[in-house]
Length: 450
Ligand code: PFF
Image (tube, rainbow, N blue to C red; front, top):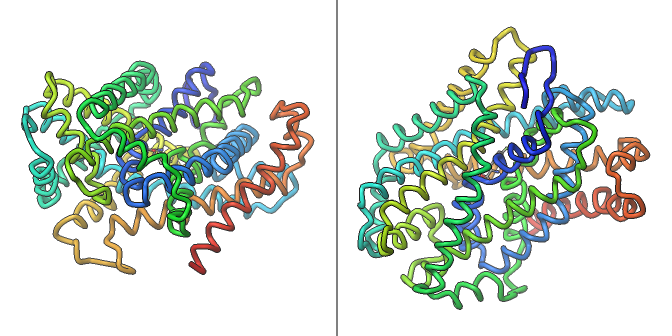
């Protein structure tokens, strides 16, 4: 992106820059840390298939809707929604979508930073050769003792947040995004190596059938809502981020083609992560339902037992931390953009204020793994509560409101021109008018009655 001054809204330097930023935001801990453990918790293939359906039928339309509205609005998410609503002769109250997105961004970044901290901590752990020759039980113990140490968790959360704040305040996010041109393919290559390792030494067949052998009976309301929520989380939807990215887009960019690229890359990385992790899970008799520790317990076994594993492990967690940073900067950036355009604070001031609020919230998440583990609201600790509230609630609802707005409250003729679909427009329109919103409603109602 070129310069981002207070009053002149910048545009992407190139289409590639835009795609890199969008992929950088989408690909992160969600793909490699969260997706595999949600697969494990929700019965493997049942989650896989509902997730893929949600990505195509709900994620893709909402991603393009956010870009389209952002491009029309040319402002931060809240003002963009307001501007477009007014242009269409609708109420300014639609700006609430932008506001709930910005709030969701703060909440997500707070716990995201704690996990980003784990990943950075693992760079050091892997690089020191700690995992050499370890069994699953031993890597499990390393993970558990990391969680039990509040000071350590807080230090790494602080480091992760400080790096995020520094990058956003210095306005060098573009550099990091360009870096992802090299780092993302490398990350994919590393996952490929781990898949090959799993295929040779792990229980690959068992993993394949866990992940892909249809088990329709296992699909229930909770699996549906988890898959839907994760589709939003992994594509960075419902948060205003993609709206903000759309606001830097030129008219010449083909929205649907770009959305398809982002969705395919994001999904490919997630599926590779699943294929890398589950052969190790089965080979070592680990619990598929291990939860948030899954990737941090399984991959160190692989690195600890392959030749050159110390260096490879170090590079892997470096790449994972990098992917986490390109996502966290997007989360912070959208909140900062609002403060910068709306208040007298400059970029550095806005970033510091937003960053410190998020850091403080993150402290509560970090402590919920140890000293505050008994602090529960609706039976969930603080970390789980933030995760559930955002993924299962604010993100799907904001996304729902966005497609409904585009499908039913905007003039369809101009959308037809913008989407450049020719005869296929009717089909696509049916998807964003009916399938995507009805899909979200069905999942919510199922959850309520289920
Ligand atoms: N999409 C990111 C991931 O999968 O790791 C996480 C994320 C980034 C969520 C930005 C939401 C967001 F706005």
